[in-house]
Amino acid sequence: MTQRLYTLRMSVFVIWFVVALALLVIELTTTTFYAVFLALGAFAAGILAFLLPDVPLWIQAVVALVVAGAGVIGVRPVLGRRFQARGPGAVGPGVHGGFVGQAALALDTVGDPLHPGHVRLAGEIWLAVTEAAEAVEANSSVIVTAVRGTTLVVRPAG
Image 1 (tube, rainbow, N blue to C red):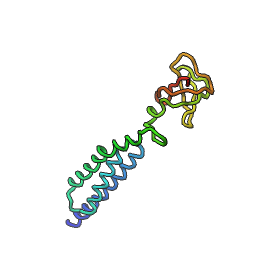
Image 2 (cartoon, one colour):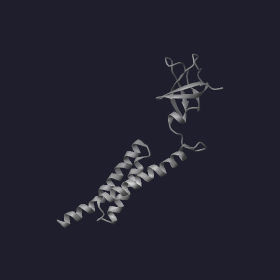
Image 3 (cartoon, rainbow, N blue to C red):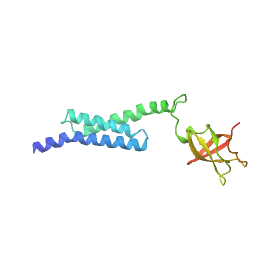
């Protein structure tokens, strides 16, 4: 009986490490920057369970929550502001915030939503429309004014 209990307590750290690994995989697929802190909390609880196997499970869970909470509340906002800072080499805040105001090149005539065209932006070809009644001619510079799903709303540059 004590051998079974000892084996069960020793395998708890493995469960914590598997949970941490699963949370890291979730972070890689969602890129929300939350699951990485949950994974760090699970990893911290796993280390505690490995080093001190007699520590109750509820204390391990509290350690996991404290480490994860400290990361989400204390570290995530700082890193988020750092990533969103403007400047050379900075990471933009995503499609909706990062492309607005950027210059692009019209590859063909870009018209209203019933007559869309294409623009080249950031090395990729995007579907584009104008809000104005007049179309933008091919090989013209345009400025992105909004993003609607995967379609850019543009206006003539200048």
